[in-house]
Length: 337
Length: 288
Image (cartoon, rainbow over all chains, first blue to last red):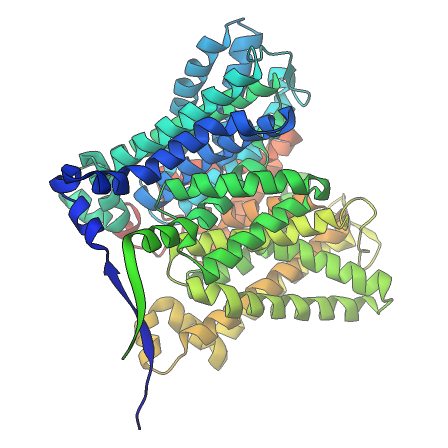
């Protein structure tokens, strides 16, 4: 019996092979091949606020960038360190509350509160999550899921920081352009910094922890210490997003611990392509405007993210960005086997 | 006396909630984050069968348990089977399913004060001078029955023995002709039905709200961590520790601290003894 089947053969483009080495700068064409995708991203993000029609959509850009930051942090932790954080809302909540309290009660300006909230919040989040860092498996996911459920209850029960009503009338940014460009620049910096970090020595160790933690431990490195550093970096990004959000709205409340901040970044991560860092940003830029359009549906939006999540994770686990990268770098054609 | 009796009731509630989760995790190593969603869904299905379709209450409960069990099997067969073994995907996929169920119910408005299912027998008895309503006694009886049933099931039936075999050593069990996927389907169906059983026993005490679903998920996992993930006696033990800890806190400190106690318990257990009270996982494998 003759069984004929076809499979896809993939070959790297010649230019891709040449530009991986030091020869990348030998011709304009190759420089363009390397630089163009990055340039499109950077210039596109910087131009975006200028071309948007209305104030409303400019606001949406700010929210989108917040989710993009959270998705970046999730991607860094999940794909490069092997930590699954189901509670992005923890970072947002802690960062937002620190910024809110230091602005409203201590009277500090946003130029001070945001750095304080970013650093202090990341430190607090890392300490809160420290007990589950030595463990492998589902513990981190569970604990990080529980914090955003528990902290609002504590705030309510003790009537801390304004209790259920939150703190209103924080200092907002001077104008909409500062709003947008501040967060866009931070997204770009975080994106490229994380990508650089993943290829540094520390990134290699973190990747080692993901693949085989026993081997890393056998090399005499403390897994807990490295994981704590990784969580600190992730929390830095998340807490900045929270602090920025509180100054964007001029208000903090327990809705900062809401489920949206946990689930949308995960959906963006799965949709955009796990492990690419750019992918989750792309995913956030697809999902957040979509969710603004669907605002009328209320809780149905979360159902919608959840379904996207399940669909992509089951049928298309590589996500969009991995797909695009493959198309960009490789030829594909069918061959008979 | 008050504390003792209500502590026992509370512990049995926790045990009922957690036993389904621990069954699934113990057998198939799948963390079923949809547990809370399935719990609340069963309550709602029962409500629909009972109120909208006007079925007999016992029949409504039976039907809704069957539906939930089938749903668990479907979830495994069509979704989780494809991501099995990839830890991140398992967690994200099951969490997303649970979210879809719970937020879907919230969107439909199918949750809130008006949605209650009736108690089985509306009576209050006095035990050692402490008034206690019949539903709570039924919960205790139900909890004992579930534990006894599970013990008999896993020790004396072929399917139950297969489940235990897979839980102990998957590779050896597969060599003896036990299908890993089949047992996983059975475990997920059984686990979902147990979540449903907990729902129909416990929900008559209050109303069906979406927040309950999240709490149930958190409680189930908390009990399992304290008892040791995947260990059945551990789950029962953890339920008693947590149940009494919570009742004591409510009594001496204040009801708003319930959740915090659960949380502190987990943190302490993770720091002191990460494999839980009855953890079977090797210390080295777990504490990396």
